[in-house]
Length: 329
Image 1 (cartoon, rainbow, N blue to C red):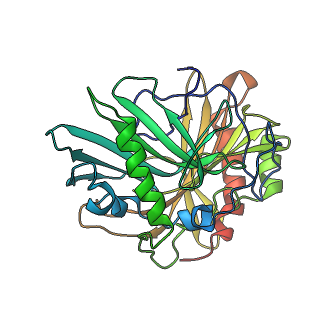
Image 2: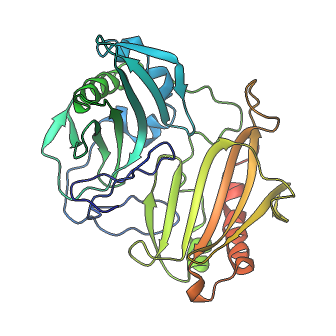
């Protein structure tokens, strides 16, 4: 959906994704070059909101009474997270109404114009074009087009006010002692996904230089050329269940690492995902095998002549440069 003055939300928790009209800039990484931003902006140098500092912040631990007490009573049983850097919770206000909040630390922001307001010293973007819902974001990097966002839903009320209030508390917490994820040995939590693929491997797979687009603090896309054009290489680091032999054939990445090749071919995009589990991080409420997953995907349009076998060959070639850069568990 294309609407003026919107922010693009990539999370699976969001319904009704929004998109601003123009890409203002793009982040860098070791695997490819970057296009210059549309307009020069001063860098955000606040150490508390640099990507390396934010990757380890546990957003669910921020959604407590200390952060949300001014809005009402947070329902801790409603806490839910599907990705690193993301968490949702419900808060019951003084009138008994439920306010739904989703916090994203490392949210991809695509802005049509420069922010003019600030919150706790950071550029502020507010998107409230839909009654009862609001997205309130602070920009943490213009270069990488990333920020911290609260998506709020307050049917029949002002959804932006609770978003602003909660975001203020979160940014204040980031400047003091933000809660941290527990890291297992060999974790990829702190890894920059834009910096682990070999530059030559990416450019060989794409057939030319690439345009780097961080989608979050843990996912990065490398597009063909100097904009978002297929073909594309994507590196994604996340928690979940690993693929198995039923999902596709194995591929030897070297040094004892084996990836599963998951093919997907439809009328619009042909892709192959070379994926493997880096480490196992068992949890009582998760199925056996749960852990930290690495995904290297190659995608392209079928009209280019790309087939899934070729996509897998390209994905595996890039994955062979990612695996050793992550080290051993």
